[in-house]
Length: 123
Length: 108
Image (cartoon, rainbow over all chains, first blue to last red; front, top):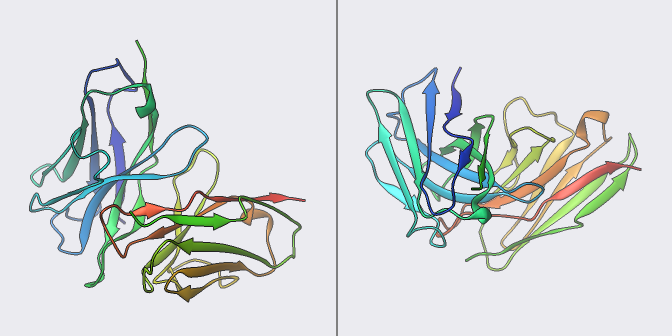
């Protein structure tokens, strides 16, 4: 059974870099139908897509965050990561990792999610 | 960006009611629309993809319809476990993928 688990610091200082990792268990990250994604949710607000990455390293970012976001994948460890630079208080959110499922046409919906991790940006 | 607008933002209902949530896209997304349920403190859970296909394990009281720019999620015979927030998401365009603002279904 495929599971995802986020990890990383819960507190980041303004202007620094937020770094999170998502460990995938129960299946290989090297699947051509799985586009691994990050989605965030500020407290009390809605969902915002950050980006997706394929096992090959091909990335797809939200244009509104593109200049600050870097995603990477480590197939040997079956995990993928998110780096968000120059954070501000507006980046305080629950960060979810999820599997973007590709059925061979169009793009991805998210069929499996991690539990999420709260990251607070504060000095 | 494709904007996704959900209505209503809050819906009050009773157990046993049938409810409908609407999601409108600012341009056509064909049938590439998903619906999620989210409970407080939990991750979203996929209910429906391709506008009307029920995800495995999701009760049949959930149904979706629509194409192009207008979509609906219907929950028949609302159960206590269904009080939650529901989001739509378009995946016609990845630049960016976008979610609706959410509809909170609360107990009347």
